[in-house]
Length: 320
Image (cartoon, rainbow, N blue to C red; front, side, top):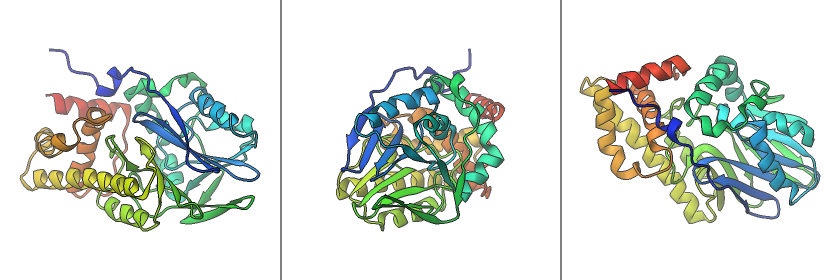
């Protein structure tokens, strides 16, 4: 019998995008469970949080931005390093981009594994990389901060902060405190699976609580619909926390019982499927999620690098 392909390789249905006004200064660009982007419009410039996957795909977001402002898109923020978030960065240079900003942790991950990640992501999920031939290479930050930085876009104050590890070791949130609007990147997901292949699962729940403590009343998650009031924000944080704690907890149970990776997958499914089996990209994420949770439960704190070859090796071990 032929081995099944990655669930993501069969995911060919184009998702409907939405450009949602959160305030006079903030917009959410969402796509039915595909990666979201954020837009902040200041008095003198524009900031884009997460670039889309390719320069070709970025043109759709730029078109939305140009429907509401002609200010230069001066700042591009990478919420973390994954290819699907960052490879569209070059499209913004023609729109006035002066700085590509990332946390120190994100910069270190690009150095360590950016090239391998780019290859593996493109092969895993071809639909998300439309126009991949337009990607000039890795997206390198021109400005790196350690823990946080503040940018004044005219009078509008925007804080960029690494509040803790979770989805990766370098996750960055963008926070408009005056309007209680947060762009969380993949620290928060809603109605979509959390991809945890490069995660720090043990630390993620505490980081979510640090995020909750900001008191956001609107939040743009990495995937899923924009959360438009405090109750929805809490629900998104709770959902993500439940996902990652159920995942790691069930993997720890499996390791304690000396299960192999395939047995661990079955055990984790028993806990995860009833709660999350229906959400966007669940089947795509789960093999990578379980593999990372299995590693972390066995004491591998720093995520192993995913390569296209390792993807196939993992997939084969779960099929046989």
